[in-house]
Figure 1 (cartoon, one colour):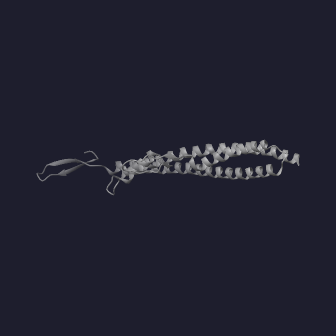
Figure 2 (tube, helix red, strand yellow):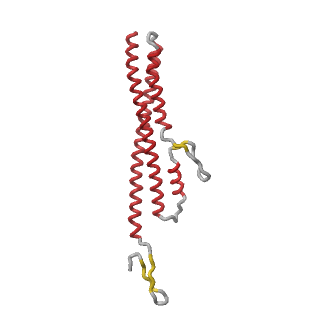
Length: 201
């Protein structure tokens, strides 16, 4: 007799074999799904950390942009012998740097939310349509749902969230890097501008 069959004695005295689901067969699948969910969560947290780091860098660059722009404008107003064009050479990359930093802080990584008759979504959101659909599918599971099916849906949710975090962190890192490069360029121009101001004094 196979391990997944049960031999039952019928009232007539005959015996019948009944197939049954072995719990031992389901256990490895459940463990694999649980492990995949945990690993996907860990990867998600790594990308979230990258995202937060990029936002912090962008915020620091934006603060530096504002400070350097204020100093440049103040110096340009105080010294009349220096051409205003020199100040504009410093301010132009600062403005571009500030724009890139602002995008990194806010707009980068956003998706356009598409609402459906059964699900209303914001126009701009970090959650992709795929991630929203997987969350909606998981919410439909009731207390009598198959545990492995719930695990599978949970895995899909975390994989979708991990992909969203990966894409968002990449976008934010890109714009934060652009903002930093532009700030360095503006800083170099500001040094030249400062030398001109000192010489004119």
